Image (cartoon, rainbow over all chains, first blue to last red; front, top):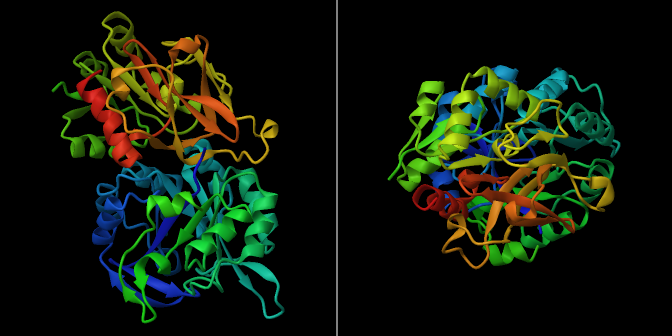
Length: 250
Length: 207
């Protein structure tokens, strides 16, 4: 039986790792290589690393950092941030990264998703969708990098991305991100029931019960950030990961 | 220990494989030309992506004749990984090109329409069950799991060629095959932690 993946998401800003809350207030949490070595020894299912500054600041992927990270990873690794072209993707995959995560590029040039899937296979292409509630309570696709959002409806956008060849959807609820109060379950259910590709739920995980709830709504994989890097009410930095027994119960 | 030659035809997961073999202390080198293939004593054929683009790139690398010589005449042990496994078969539903035809088998897409709840690609960690004994899976852990990322899977014409079988949404498919020195793994041993290390170590030392 295919087990449900539990995936730490690490946010890169410059040379360091940070953790945000609702996409804001980045708090420095340490050196990426050190964190990855710890996750390696914990035999994590998969790791997602997102450079949250690259697209908004307009700089390319940090290829040297990616190389350093990939040579330490003996688990599947996905990388996102600053990717603009098939050549960017080729360089990242060549370094030993399994998948790329497109967000800004998919909004700006949706056809890149198709080109990338044709060239590298859908299994290598994750597209990330950030969803935010409007003042009127409606869920809309959001761009943290300031790209123009042409398709605002998250379900329609997910279906478009699937048709373009996206192999997975990485779905984040901005309002839940970093809060550790649980995922946006209705959003997860809405997307999972519409698409046939795996959906990675992100934003809000704080405990195993949150994982169980998201899986019930259809998520194929469960991403968490704060839950795996913070400990205790004062959010002391400590890298943790559930045991295999705990994951098997999800 | 025999060094392992990794066929480098421009596919993308070479870095991971090299990193993993290095971690295991297994000497490895890349082959990009027919001459380098001819020096090989043990081979890994990696691969990710689409079938046709994979086989076309491999053919245009000029290494196929040398590989045929090594695999079919000299019977050098070879392990195909992921798309590399599928390229070793006759053909795939994914494309129109002929495969290498080293093993009587072909690749087909997961029939998600026939299996409720089956999402494609088959992505993540899944267990595998041995259907026969092999040096590749000697000293196995009680249960073992590997990392998969595939939309297509191999169907062997001779069921005796299937080495490992994996269940997905109630459907069973060949997650590894072995016919003598010709071996293939649908999963990524280079990204499967200690289970992948065990499997690749067996290929390096015992195959």
